[in-house]
Image (cartoon, rainbow, N blue to C red; front, side, top):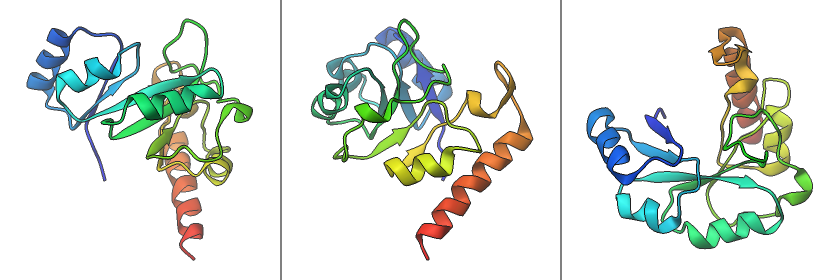
Length: 158
């Protein structure tokens, strides 16, 4: 499955509607301070990124963003909305999220299988973990990441 996802951070409703019209993404990934009301008002399928700072953040998000297709759980880094390469503190994660969710933060080809085994998310998100330098993806790291996910997934179906 391949989906076109537009990642936005604190854009206005006017800007997002222009983006939807011109790019026609399958989903919007809200990665800023957008409220559940704001996301719903746009009326486009979305994921909501939640930076996990304490044990209650996940459950508050599950209750608030009921119409999100999924929650993307990422590490909290003060003042930075994402893309930090930091991992979620495992002590802050609930045993069950209670809905579809995506794991982000600090994933790379070497640790993604362990993260999948530990957390059991519906999907994983990677960025800095497959870069050769900031913003520049390394195709061999990307292939290794995908391979690690596929191998873990195949092992689960046996």
